[in-house]
Length: 138
Image (cartoon, rainbow, N blue to C red; front, side, top):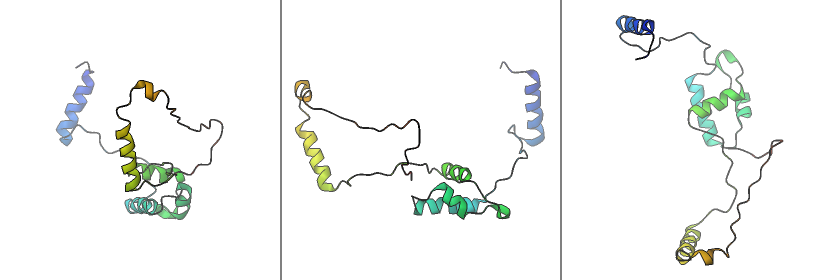
């Protein structure tokens, strides 16, 4: 197994004492929010997608009426599956638009390389390396 003998001995001893080889609970810093507060944070952010983590941290008090940080709010939202995304800015496609897109694709499905060479595809993207661009995330 390529493991030290003492490791095997300790695991066997722990199995005999506790009927499991998993780690025992350790002491650590207690969470600053309760499970109920975590659920309320998630519910508030689902209702209001534009609510920032810093604004939510100012509104929420943790255990013993202590202030929680914005990073704590972000961690709680992340563990529940919510992540920051940029909001969609653009026209909302209707059924008519989707039908027209499908017709266009079907008309151009048989094009060969020579016909596609006359088409210019452009993908514009803005890169901001030095500073924050001020875009809102939801």
